[in-house]
Image (spheres, helix red, strand yellow):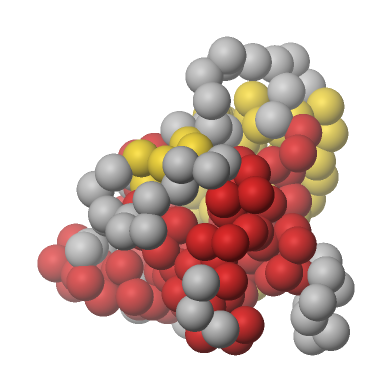
Length: 189
């Protein structure tokens, strides 16, 4: 596994911060994030990279207070779907207007690399109506977060790219090689 510290791009942090602060009150996210990393800045910039640990810490502590989610994975799935709706209608809008679902899915590894510096997107199958991908080298404590992120982000992206009725499933998750790996499937019409 890479010795690199897991980091996420500003939009991932901003999405978590905005959702938590709207739900629990202004400053909730920053208070929890700074328990993990005292130097988390008040102002998060979309183009900057941030340590993922403070975000994970804030999400884990907050989901424990929410009855509507059965764990971190389902919580992150909702957050990632909302983030996709916002980001893909803004940052990637022009790409989605010309992309078919299959074309968009071909770009999934690149898009993932724009949001996180961990989790290596590997083998995939991309046929009409079905996409299967293996994501490896995931640090153990990020497996639920990553599973939820993919389950929330890609179905929303596929809808925005013209696909209908997307259904996301984690086929398996297991230790493998240099960390954990997840095999993920997305079906759509």
